[in-house]
Image 1 (cartoon, rainbow, N blue to C red):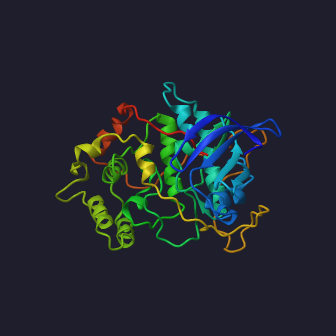
Image 2 (cartoon, rainbow, N blue to C red):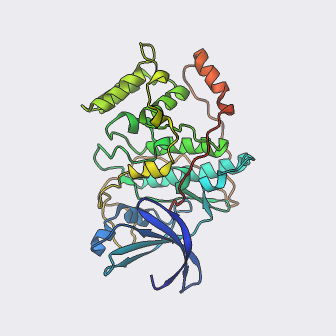
Amino acid sequence: MSKYKLVGKIGEGTFSDVLKTLSLRDGKYYACKHMKQHFESIEQVNNLSEIQALRRLSPHPNILMLHEVVFDKKAGSLSLICELMDMNIYELIKGRRKPLPEKKIKNYMYQLCKSLDHIHRNGIFHRDVKPENILIKQNTLKLGDFGSCRSIYSKQPYTEYISTRWYRAPECLLTDGYYSYKIDMWSAGCVFYEITSFQPLFPGSNELDQISKIHDVIGTPAKKTLNKFKQAADTQALATHRVRLLENTGGQVPLHSWQISKESQKQDPLRKAQEKTKHRPPCGELPMLNLSGVAKLTSCPTPTLRSVFPTAKESGDTPASQSVRFMGSNIESEKQKARKSSLKHFHLPAIGRRGGGY
């Protein structure tokens, strides 16, 4: 780190500190992600899934650029030197009263979907898409913090408690780790709502409350979907119990009457409590890469995912998109209609959230 001068602290996470640094070589400012973990060797460093993912995915206009990996063998310290962004999405909307322009929201969401399309086509899924991990600089959006990423080809079950609860897909909540890259799209939808309304869509105080909030808005899944959850719930009693609760909409105990303790109803100090329960994936779970930064995978087949995004115009404008019509049942209960009509009046108490995203 002798080539960099510390300027200030940007944020702090469970596994790292993010610092603003000045390069003594080119005079430019960079973000330094200093890991709290102690590392024994350069092999251990190169096996980190986060470093492998950033090397494989770069360069891309909507993925955070990794400039340098600084490893001090004597101290066992590791720092990732990344490009410096202005802020994250949460910092953009925090305390804001006036809605963001519709054009800006569409542009940000287009860029977020482009970043997810790119990482999925390269055999990686993020697993922790949330406003704090989406960085912006002027009109450019970049996805950061790949510390929880995983290979699409790795064997299930995965870690259960990986993403922040509010952005966790139902399959993460209702199974013992049987989920896929599609959980990133669920999280992106939650982010979309939050950018538009400045409020989280499903702010559950615990896992059961999280499922309840999702059910209140979306309703009961189809029987075919519930059967899939049952099959993936394995033998653990809690996962099976969650599925039965979700299924039980016409029985004796409706979802909204779950008995949740007073302590669990209190708003979490958001990420501080949730990030303590997060587990990082073990080192070396992504296919090893050549240190020269070769991005092409050779150890596993190319995913059969086809990009649905047209090429962006040179002017940088978001390509025009057609409205999407959702096919499904139009039958809603009076309770669901009343709930939907009251969503715009819903306000949450102030909460503490953590910065970062690198």
